[in-house]
Image (cartoon, rainbow, N blue to C red; front, side, top):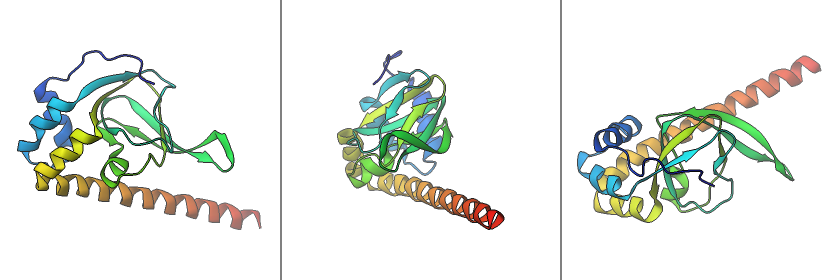
Length: 167
């Protein structure tokens, strides 16, 4: 799945800035344990970071590049329906990691993608140790769910408008 790991870690300041860009209310004290757990992963264009239905192994903090989120199309498990593009800085895998389920979408690199990967166990341990971090990431999760709802509403509106124009 991953192509390379260069470098193996981000610099502490870059990691801190990345986390705070994603979760601005994150307490500074939780940054060190997350930093200690992370590994840098690099993906080439066309490569999948995550695959829909796969067990969630942790979170990906994107610090370079763009990914395309997609859903499997109906019964055909080879076709993907593109949902939206996500560019760095961003987090992938947060719902599955926090809620304990598999990935609900696939994420494919559209360009060279650099990500700091934090394994699920280390991420959840940091949340248990620092409850304010749980609140900060819950706010990020809430924003993500709201954005998804708005995207679905927009798709529904677009589809309804097309149906009306063809009737």
